[in-house]
Length: 157
Ligand SMILES: Cc1cc2nc3c(=O)[nH]c(=O)nc-3n(C[C@H](O)[C@H](O)[C@H](O)COP(=O)(O)O)c2cc1C
Image (cartoon, rainbow, N blue to C red):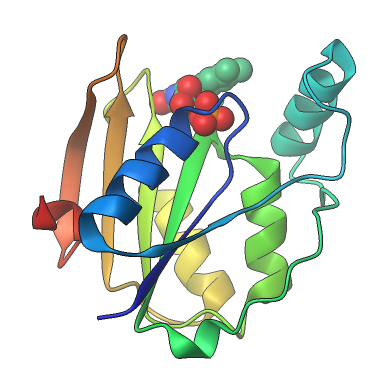
């Protein structure tokens, strides 16, 4: 099965999870890069503002033929209960090209299933997900699956 993991990561935590799972299952990776200042106070404020107001964030251009993948895994960091702005923009931009999707939600504080986020994703992409899971990012380097539904890549450890 040919898979691609698409992710956004501000601090590198989600990138770390994406890298490790891509290696384990032999998947390709696509990192969403916002067109914004890097590692400055302004960047953080801009990111939080666009995430909380659900506004579009300009992201870097890329060219990927998603048709050639059997599964597209979207790794989504949650910020204040919301999907991070760059992932949201990517999903809205590419809705229609993303099929056979799996969601992996990256979170830290609460082990919840983010059902409304999953409903929004299905509705926006116009199809039901193959699997939806979440990874709880704890202190240190251990990333633990908090929930796994469906035939998730996280079962392939
Ligand atoms: C400002 C801020 C708000 C956050 N809000 C939540 C939240 O509401 N729920 C949650 O489970 N995790 C929350 N987190 C934790 C992030 O989901 C977690 O740190 C994740 O690793 C972020 O991905 P990244 O570091 O790769 O960008 C928050 C983190 C930050 C910095």
